Image (cartoon, rainbow, N blue to C red; front, side):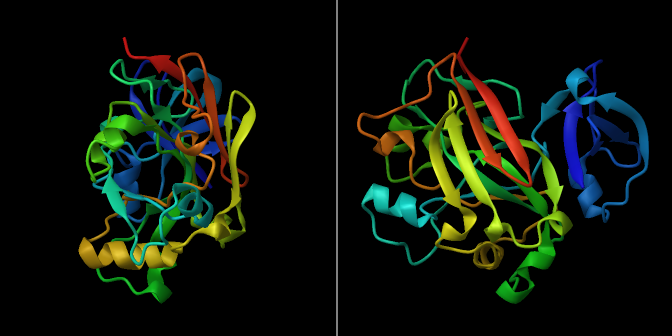
Length: 272
């Protein structure tokens, strides 16, 4: 099942299953996070054409957005760093993300606006100290993620947070695809395109830390809750390590495609 969060034509927030070019609004839960916490049983009401709505990040109000750095072997290689012994972690705020079709905003203070295509895992069942063998039972589904990065701010200190949390600098979507439709996400591939040109292309199996390992590690630190997001990292090919460097510019279009999930597409706009 595909589940999208959106604004109705009269600007009301809603969410629901996507079928045949339409999305049906769920009536018995206020948002997807609440629905996941309640077990995911839906009662649906009015249907809307996808062309008439504004898509939002699939989970609009996650308790946590956990991002993993240096988690593809190709990306580790291009950075010149050693393979980490533990997953490098930083966090993003919901305000830093926008939905499919909405502009990624390049801040006025920097033109080092980089793309990072990723697979994101959405947690469905809460847990603490989750064993690797049990980890996939806690997954509600998957979505595409663009960890848009303001590289000069990311490099101000050893902490990545400043370069990862500018408003509307990243995106997630277009929807959540439930885990039953993707029994093994490592069989998927991911491609990032800037104005149609392929920037990143990789099998998900290139992950240095697997999804069960990430869930086990993160849940050792903090209780994972329904609706939490784990962005699993980006592969090689980011703009920072190209020669010459290649960053997103206002007027560009960036796409992150994972067959079986969909294509997350965003125009790039200058900060007003």
